[in-house]
Image (cartoon, rainbow, N blue to C red; front, side, top):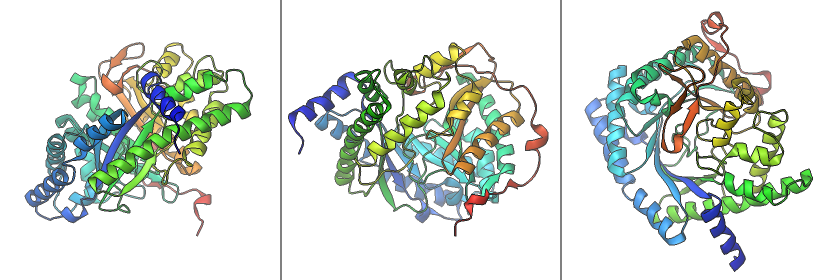
Length: 454
């Protein structure tokens, strides 16, 4: 039973502590659209997306009005496009036509983003995979809603270093093609290890081949709520700290479960998962870094940061998993730099470096996220950064990712403004020493010994 105090408490979280449902994401399988004729493929894809997602935005808005719960984004994820377009798309330019079709379908549906312009290449690239990857710079520079991801590694397969090397070049090309928008195209491209099939968050969302034809996934977020709760037990012992985070995560996740079930019922689409990640925004008081400071750090990045983040991430999962029928996606604490004012402050104070962020990704949900670096960074250096992050995910059997933005024409000490939920970011320095000979080796890094569990 829900009593009046709990209703009041939830309303307070929404109005004063930045609680929101970050996204309702409608996953759509496009496997039944496969055709070896390019025009037929594009027509089928457009028709299925616009038909299936016709009521997504209006349903989200109805739930917002009726329950008073802010739903920031309504999004679509699709079957990885390399799988869908392989028969018809014989070149990168063919895949670009598919990207334009996806963009038109997203615009017609009224959603904020569409994810799934993706390839899964943890063990090697097919011709279609490589064509899609090579099409990414043009596709992202010519579309508004399309987001792209490439899974280059997994604990079971190892890391495809050929793809890693190629993506260093692709990221630089994407940055160059979108330099008039401060290389914004790179904010819509993420490189994964162990990518989940049901992630509702962009830019990494895609609809995995193990999923149903359509599914509703919800991402819920409440860093401000957790921070406020911890401020009420300031100076308490670790047991109290952990219990407070768990109880708060439970309450936040219940809101996501409610929205997911309502959206599922009203659209007649199966409920997939709730992703209970703490996803920050540039808004004051909506920061994961501020939670770390409330736990006892002067700045994110200070000694003790990795331990504090591990504690936070674990307690969020323990509390949230009891609040939903199905928890999935990434589910933990996001640490994007540009989208978190506390992280930005830590970088400006020289408390937080790229290397410390890499260490933090060992214990949190994602990876090196929304980090701006100098535009003259070498492609091989970007590939090396990706390889390091993929290795963390592969060895630790977790999802890791890189969304890095080499801002053309800007260097360390300057700031780049992305706007909206993407915020702004100081340009961070990268290690100047070369790894070119390493990333130029062909083939893949084998799976770790503990991957053999059959």
